[in-house]
Amino acid sequence: MSEQLEAQTTLEREFVAIFSDLADLFGNPPSLGAIYGLLFAAEQPLSMEDVVQRLGISKGSASQGLRQLEELDAITRCRENNGRSHVYTARLELKPLLSGFLRNRLVPRLTGSANRLRDLNDLLPRLSESGRASAELRLERITKWHDRASTLLPLAQEILEV
Amino acid sequence: MSEQLEAQTTLEREFVAIFSDLADLFGNPPSLGAIYGLLFAAEQPLSMEDVVQRLGISKGSASQGLRQLEELDAITRCRENNGRSHVYTARLELKPLLSGFLRNRLVPRLTGSANRLRDLNDLLPRLSESGRASAELRLERITKWHDRASTLLPLAQEILEV
DNA sequence: ATTTCAGTTCATTTTGAATTGAACTTTCGA
DNA sequence: TCGAAAGTTCAATTCAAAATGAACTGAAAT
Image (cartoon, rainbow over all chains, first blue to last red; front, side):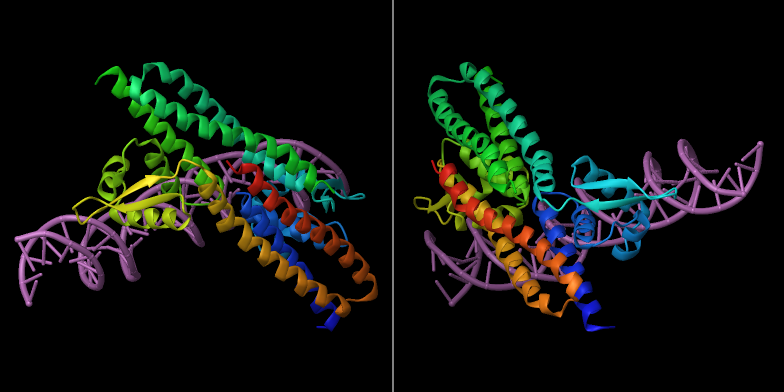
């Protein structure tokens, strides 16, 4: 294998690894990142078959991963000229991928904990006098954190914007 | 069970759930969050035995979880008066817990990807002329993201500060 | 209309992280 | 110094999430 090809292969492998880690960091399946990494490294659009071959994953994983990435707007699908197959390209701006990951993971949890906090506030009057003060303090602390996290989220989106 | 006790139990269960989710969000074992949540809800310091009983987890998990939380400075341990056992209290400021979670999870990955990116830059000269331009563009994109994330991290720490 | 190829679905299997629990060590009181 | 209780360790187990792959659907060429 030529030195150049070897280097290209390393590049591809490293991009796959970087994005696998990133997906994992955000609580997404590593395969999702791996697929994106492969497309990100590729100079030409790749078919699903290419993805299966080069990553050594199953057709099922490839199909699901590609669809999810498309939903996040991290990749684009287009029909291959005069074939019955499709071909995929990574959007090189990382924003769609990152904000998709954030959306998937952070947002549901923030709204979930907002609901919990509301319910707990409703519970306060049922507590004994002494317990109530303590519970109020604790709820306040969590609520403060929660508000700050909610503030941070759009800020993070902005900073990560390319 | 009195209405008040029932409410106190609900409060405890909800705090446990909130912090389990939080731990999970940051890629830590849910049990770690659960233990913190229990101590956070408690008005009195609890022993390891208490934690085992109330959460229904094993001594092993409790021991390891308590130690980790102590290392993060999220809880404090103190010797019980005239006993040979210890007793634990949650620090009510959430900062130690949150920044501990961030440290555990984000920092190692940021330095890991910094290393990868450095290695990839060294690889560039070995690529063919055409491939090099494309690889440079891609590396630049990731590096830009990486720098922004590195900027965001201390900012997040500051915002989450109580 | 039929065949064939691309892609999807989802029940089963795999994998890896979290948890357990039993053996071990440490600590303190008698 | 010994015994007992507290706490730790880590190999084995459990469990949930991810990946697989075989059966299926749809779409295009003949």
